[in-house]
Image 1 (cartoon, rainbow, N blue to C red):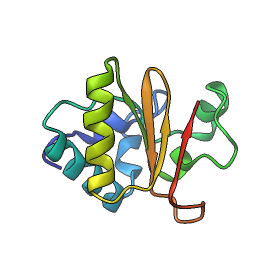
Image 2: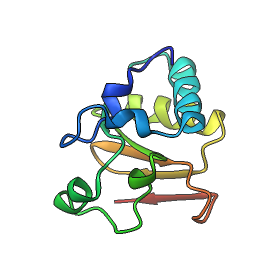
Image 3: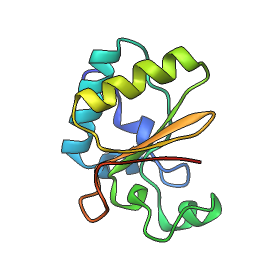
Length: 117
């Protein structure tokens, strides 16, 4: 990866767990970061079952499979840039919150969906 270290995706309770992220997902995310040309701060990547429960994550969370990331976003302009980059590389499962953008590539879930938190 050009723009990320695997440790950025670690579950807080398990150092090194970022290495369990899906390689294809990470490549798309890295490609999106290249297009956006702004930093992506990862709030959440891989999650252990315990950490997922502690943050109120869904039982079937894509974070548990290493197929999701939450990207911190503070400004509307950055939200626009990040969303456009994610869409440009082919992501089609995106959740938008006030302070983060969730993106995943979980093929077991509906595709072509955007949602708000």
